[in-house]
Image 1 (cartoon, helix red, strand yellow):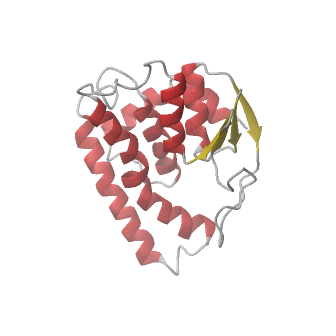
Image 2 (cartoon, rainbow, N blue to C red):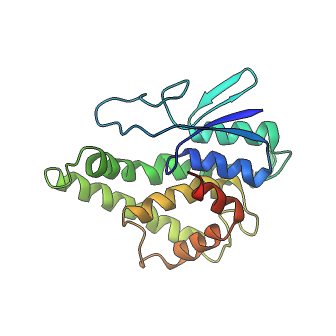
Length: 202
């Protein structure tokens, strides 16, 4: 059975949410998140990072890689356009946009404000990161248009990747009333039972 190393309010929520959406059996290994003020790879997992999974002889970390692995092994065509289909490129684009583009400046805010407690001494850097995050959200707001989900009417794993980023953005005060489409999109995410279970897991 697939094992997921999990701590609340970490990217492990993404993986748990996906497993719930797909109804994949799993074992949850709870671990306490260790704030990383100075060192990385400090978590109580096989790699020192969260999330991580073990699945038979496979052990990997990085939430995006785990999501793609689970889709390939257990998805059976669900929550992702088929390889070679017209929407596959757009799916991969949004799947990675969530972390590499949108979360990147948020990570700087988390690092300086929460982990290092340097909001005042690094105020210029924090403000710059918030401004860059806002540019990403402006782009997302325009791109959503009247779509229900990132790919249109079909919910996908790209929405799972992005959903966690939106949780973080809301906690950091970056996602506000300037983004009515994103907020409506996030409200739809919050209504999904699999998201609710993953977000509430302690």
